[in-house]
Amino acid sequence: MRRQYAALMVLFLVLVTYNAIATHRISRANADLARLEDRRFWAEGMLREYGAVTEQLEARRAKVASVEQVDARIDVAAVLAEISYIISDRVLLSRLEFISEPLAAQEKTPERDAAAVRSASASRAPAKAASLGKVRFRVALAGIAADSAEVAALVHRLDDSPYFRQVHPLYRDNTIQIGAAVSAASHANESEPQRTDARSVNVTEFEITCYLANYEEQGKR
Image 1 (tube, helix red, strand yellow):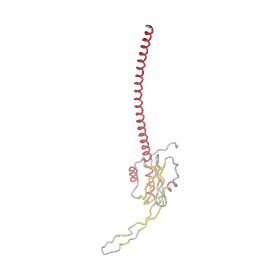
Image 2 (cartoon, rainbow, N blue to C red; image 1 turned 120 degrees about the vertical axis):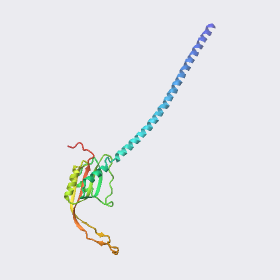
Image 3 (tube, rainbow, N blue to C red; image 1 turned 90 degrees about the vertical axis):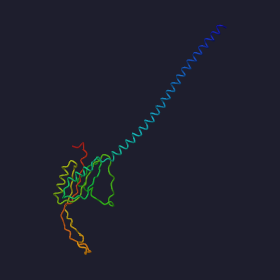
Image 4 (tube, helix red, strand yellow; image 1 turned 180 degrees about the vertical axis):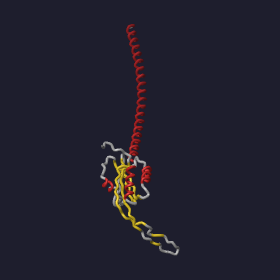
């Protein structure tokens, strides 16, 4: 009986020890699981924050891309100032246009290029959508000059200007009527305005197309 009691006591102590050890290990495992759960929540929060930041970054990149698409990359005020400096008092402009073209577009011949920018009424020619992205700007100037020598001088000044390249002129001699067709009444008792005769003047009509020199062509020899 004593041996049996002793064996039972030893078995009881072993069971108690094993239970204590198992309980301790279970507590440690629960603590590790709790820490892992906290890390999981932290990681999920970081992932959500990363996703939100990524969405904001993509949205800003899209805005930057849109701005780059519509950015003309030219200083219009400086270009207009250069044109005003180049044009003499004996030249009168009737039209000035800036037409955007993709850089990848092939160049046309000067005659077709100039004809493509002739003015037309809105009812006859619908407006074309402006090119976006990496573009070059074609400048079209039309007007009259005192004579062909003034047109040649204007073309020469455009060629010499660092703002322009590929200058192509078209011009022809023409006759216009100038003078006061109607003058105001000189006396209070005159009910009808006095008419004067207009006189004919020989001028040179011109149309010049060129490109802004704000880009470099590579790969050409």
